Length: 282
Image (tube, rainbow, N blue to C red; front, side, top):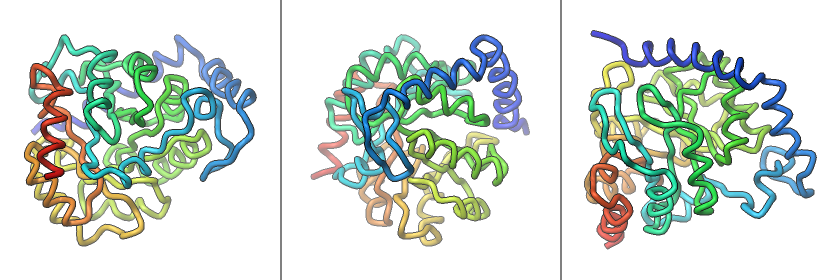
């Protein structure tokens, strides 16, 4: 059986090198670090607050937003899937994420992979001025260059996938993300990946989708729940489509629920999210 994750990572390595050729790392780093130099004084959990968090858009914590939310929905802007093709090819990043935020999303997830998910970094740039809701850069991150990209685009958090990274690479990228003021959502799929927690993320995600085959089973979150550390905020990812599933996951200890396809397939994703949240909170 073809391993989709390996295919994506092989392409991603080439893509990052192309991006570095178009905008050399030292130039990107200077753009981001220039914002640091112009930042207002302040401190954050992982050091001085970078400018993109201290300007008019202020600091936004995805972890804190999820912890305070009654629903905990992370609404995802997802136009395409490797296994199902186009979901909403005409979906606009300057419209749908803002509609999600207005409907009560605790956080937004924006896919930036182009080839497999129909995304791009510009989608974060388009969504950012429309809302103060925290934005997660959903991407196959393998290089610190992509963390600087996330900062420059206006993301508040990044996804790091255990299955896509060696443990030393995960630890290095987590430290760099925290230096840059980005929160980290670590994604695991199996119990074996719990050893990555030696370097603490801000949030721990359990992906119900196997990234090698794209088979999805939400029971994976329930199966792993008893092994997760209580001091981290847990996020269940993928395969969630019913309010009752969210309620059951909350009872199991999860506080974040990443959902995209269930809303993106609807004519009005924001309205679909609003109805869903109302059902969850009843």
